[in-house]
Length: 194
Image 1 (spheres, rainbow, N blue to C red):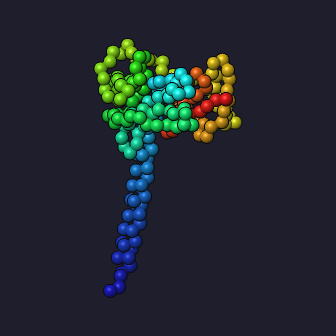
Image 2: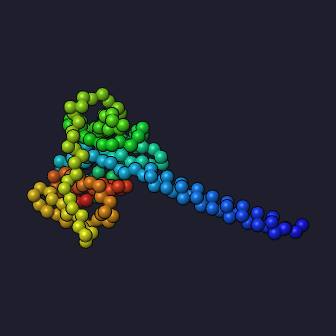
Image 3: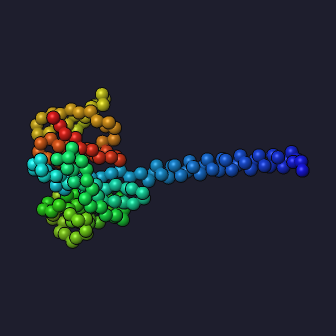
């Protein structure tokens, strides 16, 4: 059976329209994914006082469509290795994370409501007086044009290079002996200043 010119033109038009619609679908899906990126948030909830004392950091991150609050212990005796010690799924992205003044717990601000999670990441009633409003303040730092980061710590100036330095969102002290926690938009690292 021979195909007429009109049938052939219709078939080719349908194929091209299908390809265009699939391309538009991929483009829109990519745009939607870009608009729903979530930045990591973190707060140091326990600072190390000696080498054997591991600092603890609470981190918010979105993984596989889930909003997760994770407690990491940084093992100073094992090359500052991160070890997830607790994890809980929360309803939405927190606006802020804060440490507690007296306990190893974390405060989350989600949709204008503060919630306290204890050291086991179990919700607990707690008076707002115990929120440490200054706990999530980053150390002052400056990004240099040559790819280096300058930081002032204990009246001493330090300079270091780190990959992806333009995506740093905060630098926090983990101890009194120059152990730092560096928060990026989508990553976390420990840095030892010498």
